[in-house]
Image (cartoon, rainbow, N blue to C red; front, top):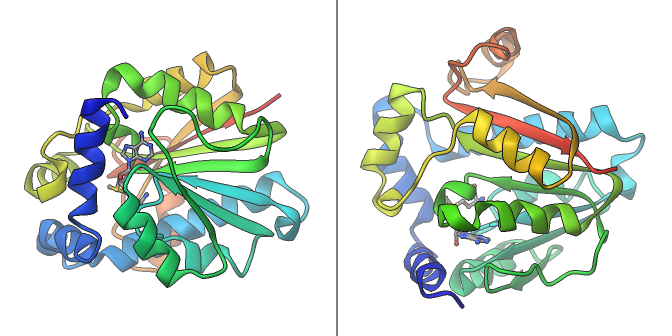
Length: 236
Ligand SMILES: C[S@@+](CC[C@H](N)C(=O)[O-])C[C@H]1O[C@@H](n2cnc3c(N)ncnc32)[C@H](O)[C@@H]1O
């Protein structure tokens, strides 16, 4: 493994048992917990999938940089299969204990351990800002490689334009080396990987409080004020 990538993997290994607590400490000022953000993004991902495919139950979905598998309890009842992959072997061990229905792998951060076109959907959530910037394109190219023609790549990232997001990243223990990427940079990575109809939108402009508040969030999708954003690319 590349030494810089190994250091990142070892850093996340240390958070195998305390990942959620570390995030909760950084976002405590917001009055929200990591579970609320996780559920809100899982809902957004499932809505995105539902709007692109006829039947989610037939889909093979890959979570790249899945960490301890926080998103997988929301996905396994809805899609066909869920696979998760990460450079942190300790996080993958924890994810496997929590989600026995998911197929997990560890890899070196270079080539994903799957054949070309294996998945209908590949997604990553708050991962690219932990990847060394000179490896960002390779990371997205690999997501593209393992996704079939007609499939979808979905990237969720922190919005570096949002002051409270920058505060959270500054205060979060495992974000010390994070390099945030703009919506335009994510868009360019997907386009350079060969994706078509690349689109970005703000999410979580309003806090993840569920119900009416969360439905209102869609009104702000075109404005650059979300605390996070979603970028999608179609594989042709
Ligand atoms: C902030 S955590 C996010 C975990 C999970 N996606 C979530 O949102 O709960 C970032 C994760 O990215 C992983 N990671 C870092 N570099 C990676 C790479 N090149 N490929 C895959 N995962 C990577 C880390 O090990 C860590 O689990």
